Length: 206
Image 1 (cartoon, rainbow, N blue to C red):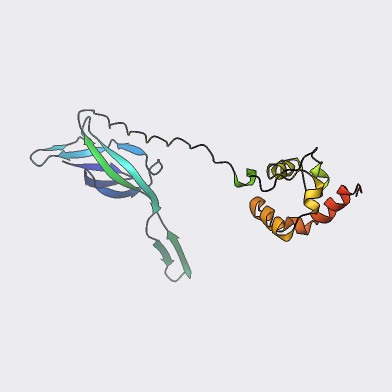
Image 2: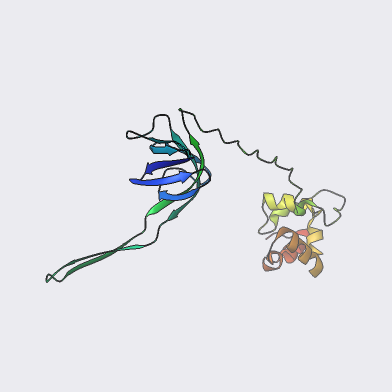
């Protein structure tokens, strides 16, 4: 079966699964459109001509993509007036795939919605895995170290870092491990956490 439809002031002969390019129609890629202006229907033996459209006939189409047509040059010139004007134009178009040709007022079948995959439980972030064994005793207020706020203090505690003495005793390898896990990009050395922690552990204040 074929149909002749009209959209955007132009006529198109279409059949099921044809892909056509028409002037831009409302609808995003993946959405379904119903084209009601069917001027002619044919099934190989009989042809029905509309007056001007065929009653109860429609064409269902899926928007494949939105694009722009080729560039057209519009050139205007007035002889002996030294007047010239040149403009370019690219028409907005929709690329449609014909999914069905309907008659007798039938409606297109509803498109089944794809089920969204269930979100998997988020794996615990790498920064929550302990890197150090937390020492016994009360935890120090790591927020006194410049650049450490409440959020960062919780992350450091989750790594097993709870006291100034631990930070003061950081080796180059320890700094590199913390840098990698928390993506510090050299922050510990740049802000000199080791010296700050040594001073705080010794009871000094800055």
